[in-house]
Length: 503
Image (cartoon, rainbow, N blue to C red; front, side, top):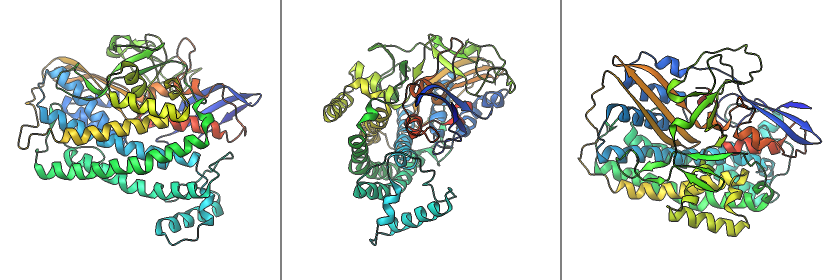
């Protein structure tokens, strides 16, 4: 039996997932990115300094990550020496965007997979937020369809939190989280110029001046965000984990883990980062080698050659291609499937052992839930790893903001060479992000983005290996063959961004 789960809601972009069911178990899955965009084509022939602006339009949720990756690629190509303030401002902008995105993902996109929104119908108190939610839920349930401003449907058949107090509390936090997300975004906009789509991020730093009043405002917003992370976000994840412990065993991808590392601690290209880079396979971490990354298109809707390395990449759309089922390519590392994202960041760093906070938090929660680090490759593991990321990043941002030199230089002097090429890598909230630029005659001759969800939601490669999300779905038992809430929980745990994956 084949079932289309699309359009999958509470994600960014247009995704269908087709599952094949036998004996109430998913035996095959196809992740289908349903549109073509072609940003690499758009960039050809443009001024290289347009790249960090244009690539932000790939996604309105994580534009800063694209701006940073593009800036890193150009810094590499131009041979720029980035002043300390410029590097710090890049970190402050991107880190704040991560905090916003983790809260958005859990509360607005994933929590409703576990929270029983109908519990609010029993609420008789006077809290204005909860009364408003009650009105929204009543209206949605009465119409049996979602409508703008009321995001609580579809409500799938399945088990939800049983405790009314937990459900109503989570819905209260749902509204509170939106206010905190605003604060994280305002923090990012202080140095980024605006959100979304920063106007201040450039190769070599930021155009914003380093001022004490801006630093103080930034610290205030991040401190408030940090408080919410500890008082609301983490306890809510713990509550879900305590009530759905089976999801430590559900949704494991069948491959390795790749992280480029997040938030550089120095201007050195291969210097230390707050969360370390690496490729984790078989319990061992190795350095990342960009030359081992290729992209297969055997099951993607492109007729350009398959298996090309990044610098050789080509893009020829072929919507009618036989055997193809998605507009997403299939990136592979040394021919192997990789999961990227929050679990990859934490697992890579945990196995390297360089960040004591990561190790302490993972060990603490592992003891609390009776699991091991290996169980982070799961639905609950991905949610918990986002929270661990959030704790580490929030602490770092407050420390990093103290390192700004008020009045100091924030931008390198840029001279675009006639011919050059460069790689730039960072970690978007959803995972490993790579930008590659090649310049000829002062113009962009080639540009390539290899994006987190392109890794996670990739189709089968030319060897027939399913991507991380497809492999995580296979083997899952489903109680309702049509709704498949178990599958939806797996999909949401990856936080797919299809606009990014098809870019």
